[in-house]
Image 1 (cartoon, rainbow, N blue to C red):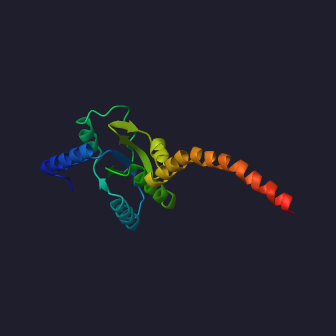
Image 2 (tube, rainbow, N blue to C red):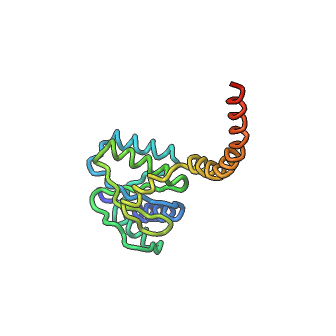
Amino acid sequence: MPITRQKKETILQGLTGQFKKAQMVIFVNFHGLSTTATRKLRTLLRITGSQYKVAKKTLIKKAMEALNIVGDMPNLEGEIALIFGADNLPVIAKNLVKFIKEHKELTISGGILENKFIGPKIVSELATIPTREVLLARLVYIINSPIQGVVVTLNGPVRNFISVLSQIKK
């Protein structure tokens, strides 16, 4: 059953609004993905604060034309769904890549990051970025490392002196 023109305009307005709000959009080809797997993916994405939306490719392209996105648009072949992410982009990409390892039917076609088209490889690389907490822990370690080195160096002569005294005592 075809969609009416009014319904298409409503969908187009909704897509354009979501494109404007999202910091990152990932295009995925979901051809062959079962309904239960799609439900799991939607739940997983909802937990990370992102949305999974299926729309016609022509409406997706029209919504993107209104945004003046830089770069070459990825090839949108097959059945395309959109994943809109506003925060915690590495976590969204990490969960998506993990889900794709379990469900081979789902493939990344590309995406949009900060108003630029990106390829599937960049989305996969984004998944390898550590979480904020891990990055902060690494920063604290790097800041603490020189101080710890100075303390070890300053304690060296005292330790050596005590070692000499214990040897003399024996």
